Image 1 (cartoon, helix red, strand yellow):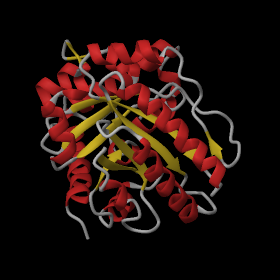
Image 2 (tube, rainbow, N blue to C red):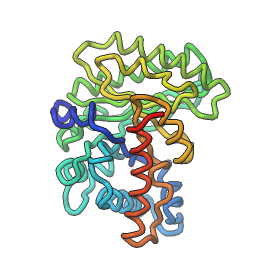
Image 3 (cartoon, rainbow, N blue to C red):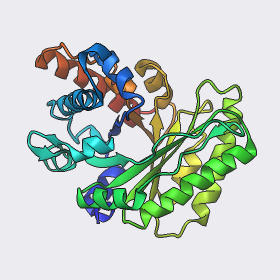
Image 4 (spheres, rainbow, N blue to C red):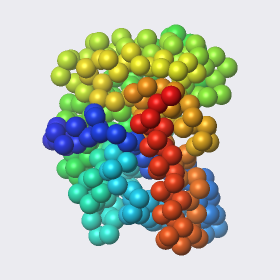
Length: 300
């Protein structure tokens, strides 16, 4: 099974580098395209929109700078997983041509906020999606939910849901990335993060010893707050989302958290533009990769 591939597991557990998040879904795609310099007037319907975002992602993963020497993994949207890059299925291209471990975003949006959190909506057809992911050589998955308030019961529910889905993923031989994001705009962010750390620690201890997971978290207000989670043998890696921080600020904060590597999206891609020539595009991407790699590997 893909999640059992010892080469991928070794890379994710111990190689220096970071994970690129290339998983904008339907709701966030127009904004991502607009930032890239493609306005909504440039595509007539949803199919054309997804074709445009796929072209952007292919340009990123086929750029000379995008290799496993610094980008050790990449999280894909389902349509990207199903698409091709240079005539090769994207997951195969990433691993065989670039040395980048492929992941798949599996969540399908969020419920309305209740008890200070936004739970994941039920994931329709998850078993079939996971089977397709395994067949396509995907190593792991990612599932996002959101925490706004320091609600003990809400955060406990978020953690429970994350671990419930993670178990379903693990049963397919894949490695799940749990992503309970604490909003950087939370009025009680530090308290929420401490509650989350404790709930995650409880959930990890309750898992079978042979399970392996990753955890993707907002860069904490208190440096190294999440370091104890890294000591659990079930945890392959703890990674950071940029959460709305600009790249320079995100990298400065990340460098203060030992053992934590980046899994950035906007902070990786936000200076890329559709009208750049290939040299400009690769130089801009290369500079972003270097900065994020540095923050992931060299700590304050």
